[in-house]
Length: 316
Image (cartoon, rainbow, N blue to C red; front, side):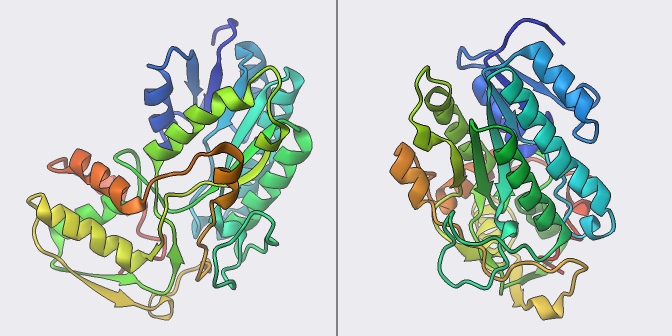
């Protein structure tokens, strides 16, 4: 850990967004540092404070989270420690040195009862421990640091780490038929596109006299919506066009594949506020998926990547 000031400190080192961010910011003339455990452990608020005060960044990006939706039902204390208490510690430490906090949240803060895209002012009403822990994290971050940007995102995929796209590619190499839930609708979001969004937000947020509208909660997802079935079909059809084998994807209902944690049936997010305030938006998810598949074509997907996703309630 260095005591020299850096431009951006990223909490999380091996996740999809943090991996994308470090690769992007590291070559941008922007001194970015990424720390995971043990340097920063969101379950240990003192480690969070020590790391941030030592690095003295202009912006702290909290890209770490507890995201095991079903497991959170059995480990609520850990989920809240990471997603709420740890996030609050990062926001407080950033405020202590006058830094901005950029914090990632989730579409799962909504209950899925709406049938038009959720906007930032819609009431939150999460239906599981994971969503409730993220809601509390949002509230704590906002209360701890007025210079906060909370980015709600959804269905994150990338060439990095563990995610639905990589799981589908592995299963497609092993099976001729995959059943995927077709009654949960949302926005697939590409982690490198989120990283690019953060890169563009950094100068706006850390300017000497920033537009006060830049602070607050925003929805940040790729344009377009689909179901998990539609997403899986696009992934496997795209892989087939790149030399993979043909796989049949069959739609099933959530009722046919019960899970410990309930998921919102509809969690599509509107990005109108992000566009209105910053002029920024993410491209269509299908374009981003094409880039992702180009990078993953011919690359083996580790079995561990897929195993970590098999309890996430999307496919059978």
